[in-house]
Image (cartoon, rainbow, N blue to C red; front, side, top):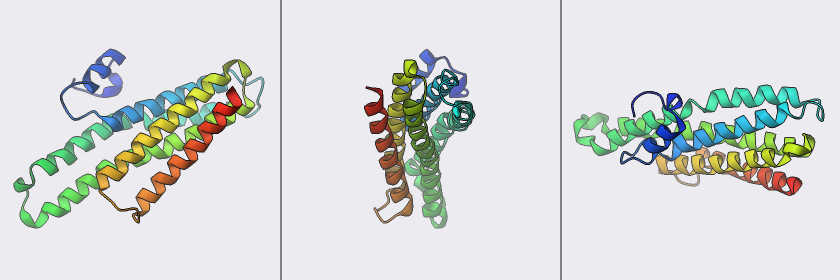
Length: 195
């Protein structure tokens, strides 16, 4: 598939995702999952305006998250292709620039999933608030959004660690791990409140 992943039908996106190429991969899928969570949060918040006076603000926040994270599916696929190119063809780079270019490509490939993880963690918390304060008729949808956001956060955090090849001392690794912890707590709280 050529073009932007967001312009593809769901069927075409899934076909591309299951293709032989390495990208789009887990980062693009995580971005779409987090964007879907944002869509659910928006829907539940709209349905909760009579139950929770802050629901209108949540609509705006969720729409902003969706607008910010959905395009990262394409950006991640492109960054990953670039990083793979640098990994697979290091002999094409001048020796003095090889490590520097490879490090820059891998850092960029880690930066995108970090942004996805940040959005996912925040969305998991926002969805948990909706479960607690929103319309009871769509409470389970808010819990689903929280779980989806958590899963996107987990995937993106794992990609940050993998792409960096970093140690536990790396502040970026500590950061994404803390995002996973926050998202996990939020989705646990959302599920408990929804059931």
